[in-house]
Image 1 (tube, rainbow, N blue to C red):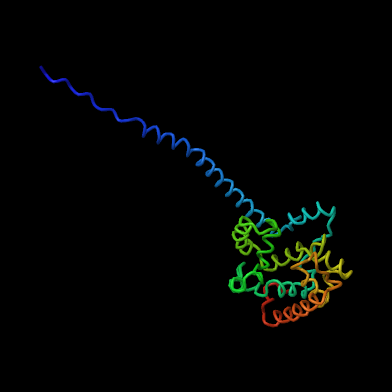
Image 2: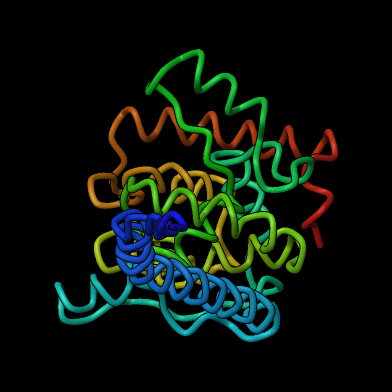
Length: 249
C-alpha cells in the first residue's frame, strides 16, 4: 500500500499578523509626520513671502507691539523713512548694538565666539537677528524661536539691503514703555524729531535699547550717561573707518 502523503506544514500566521499590526500602528505617525512637514514648509514659504513683501512695504506692527498694546491700552509709534532720520542716530545704534553690521552676513561669528568665551556676560545678537526676531517672531529664549531666527536671518540679509534692515530696526525697536521706533522716542524723551537728533541725544537713545523699560534717555543714570559717551565715540569711529558705509546717505 502506498504511503499516505504528508500534508505540508502551514507557517504560523502570528508573525504576519504582528507585522500588519506594527504597520497599522506606524501609519498615524507617518501621517502626522507628513502633515507636520507640509505645515512646516507652508510656514516657511509664508515667512519668505513676508520677507519679500516687507522689503518694500513697512511692517504694520509686531507681536511685541500687539502684546504691549493689549497690556497698556495704547502705543506711541509712527513710521519714519530712513532719509528723515539723522545719520548720527543710525550710526549710534550700529555702534551700540552691532559695530560689524556692514561686514557680516547676519551673524557676527567673532562676537559669537567672544560670547561663548565670556559666558552670559555679553550678547552676540546682530541687528539683523534682532530685526528678524522683532518683525517675524516673538520675544523669549525658546529653542524653536532661536531655530527660526537662525533660519530666517540669512533670508532677510539676502533680500533686504543693510539700509533697509536698519530702517526697519529703527522703526520697530522698543525705546521705552509703550514707546516704539525712533520717531516716538525722539519726541517722548527730547520733544524733537528724528531728523533733528543731536549726537548726544542719539547716543542716549541707543544706550537705552538693551533695557528700555528701566532706562531713561532724558534722565540718564550715571551708567547710561557713561554708556552714551562710549556709543558717541563708537559712532564717530565707524564713520571714520568705513564701517558705516553700507547704510550711510
